[in-house]
Length: 553
Image (tube, rainbow, N blue to C red; front, side, top):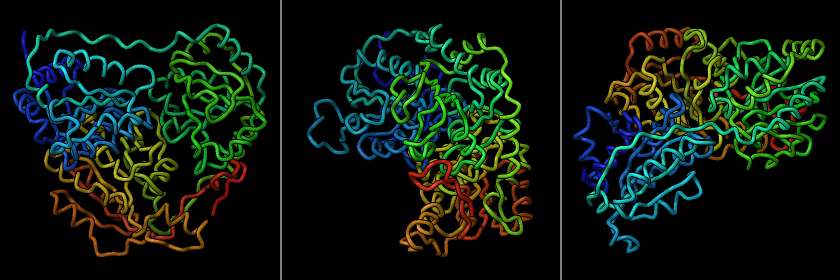
């Protein structure tokens, strides 16, 4: 049948099972939005307050559900407003499709109204991108884009469509999406045998889990692997929930704000098994001495990550779930009672601690954990509150902490929480923010109220840009250059003005009361929780220092 380009866009989304999109209309994309209106019963569109909110919502939807998130924007500033969200997804390997429309083909390259080369702009921050100048190529471009976004190491793909292409007609025939095959062609018997022998030879093995284990859905295989290896387990910020954080083997996060047990334990190990991680600088500290007494076995789907940041002794390239499955079949149960006892002693000696006499960030996170019984879906912004959320909430399942790890995007969490709640309507979704981050994209609270998406925004309000100020305290002689937010903004009133329920609290008792009520109301709510501006995130490793040099307050 003959369809217009805009009709083909909608049909291709339906082919891929897309029933939610996040976006903001404009002139160049009007034809697509007109078709979207006609199919509003099949594809629900969430109109965000800003295009960046749409990209973060698509990201949050993808992370929470494991499906591809879709966002849409018009040409020029609409398209460029997606860029931060696309880069956020790229750094954390999140599958999203960003659809933009541009000026007509004859107007391209002529500085036309609201024209921008969005393909050129996003080339370094997408897994692939397209500009479709012939309507005959549109359907296959969409199909290929979804395959690329989902396959291997996932990531964002952008499709830019000139407006005249959305109006042009061509023949369209529906096709069923191809099944995405897991990457396992390089999981050879020799590679598996090498890994097994390294594990058998180890006296002090240590397992480090990254975001790849979450993406591959490897939690069952990972739990069995840990049982077989009999080793302590640490994770990265992106790896939270891949291994049950309530288990005895779990030692906490690794790296700059990791626990002393994780950091010191890794440095004492003789074998580091790194699973689905890219060895970020925030994890490894001083690369020259990282795991200096250990052999390193690296398991990852992306061959580009092997030996990129850390030289390793052996590697297996493939989907994490498939690699662990292959190793588990060939590995006999190991036993390291003295090593595990040493780790248990370290956990007892170096617990996370904070002042429980006043309202603090860690106290807020622990109270959220207690009230939700560890079953909430947590999103965060970026900063001190993000680290507290990683340290003090015990994630027992994957896809329950959604946070910007690689790019560190302030303003990410609120949009992501909306996408997560849309994708997982039965989950309690709580976004943990700082007051600086909330200012970035607070307008998305109006999106939540417009559609009655019952997310809970917890603002840990210290009236400063907390993490930057912490660095200024420790490394810049307490010169607080433009990090103080002492002003008259009342965030609870801001929330009320946008149609949400607002609370202001200064004690842990009042916070508990507000959170319980917010959960029971099942409407968009904001809790403005005031803490001391001098509260800091500990433990900490100074930039470029060895993990052995972890210090606390």
